[in-house]
Image 1 (cartoon, helix red, strand yellow):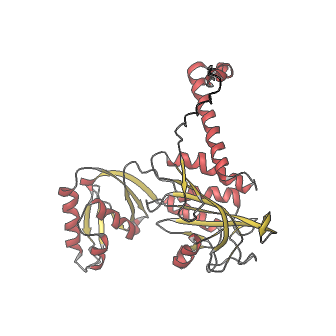
Image 2: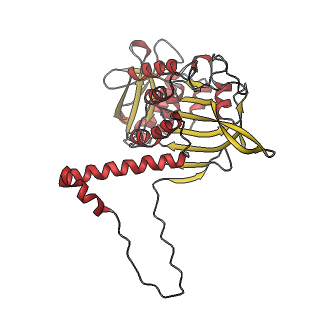
Image 3: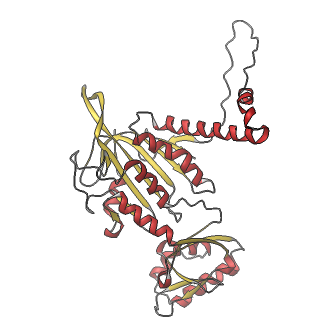
Length: 363
């Protein structure tokens, strides 16, 4: 048993405008952010930092087409890393240097210190409120918060009225407000914590030889701008307190997906089926659900390949011939069979940092 602190850290640090009282409110926020966002791959030679004309502390990023956007706190740090400046972004923020000097420093490094590279820029907003939200590598596989929240709403409803909802306090259901919510999002990332405290799982010998019960819960987090991976954590627990600590957590399992070019497909094919199992109240272990999703995907890919190569009518006849055959070998009597070689797995299971016995699947 352990205590999970992820939800507490979110609860303790999020301002009021990053807290939502239902999944549908969070869904509307994420949808609007996506609708007003656009991504573009440009060369580092096309990026130019400009001092804002109406703000002596303001800084803008300009493009060759004349468009300008104000970098967010996060994207300014990414630009400083991209420019390979000897001074960190915090120095420019706190030094009090005039913005023309800061712009000259970054422009010089972008042109003469760093080689020519492609950068994927994410710009959001319209009119005078345009912001640069991210400056990442050209192969960054963006998974939109809107897609993640849409999947959650489809399977768990509004997150406050069904079985799966914002957890109560010591097992007692609460009216969700911005003080006790576990639904968070900003221009940088999102975090959701839902629990099913109605349909608890009975456990024999739960404590001191006495039976007891555990509730099911999960975390989901994501960042569109490179702040963190897409991830989900699944677990059983005793209760959640008013400070959003999760007490008596057991069987904590994490699934993480890095934002590479194939990340959007892996989210759909590997994480979404696990959420479906949870929504349907399945007792299937998380790791088994992930493996079932991967096996189903491999079977579909195989059928598509055979149909394209030989035609759909021959798929049933060809499919059994693709299975590996066991080779019979004669062995001398009295000898034990040699161990089978371990095939390399696509994902490996490691120990999660949040629990000493928590497996983590890194994809």
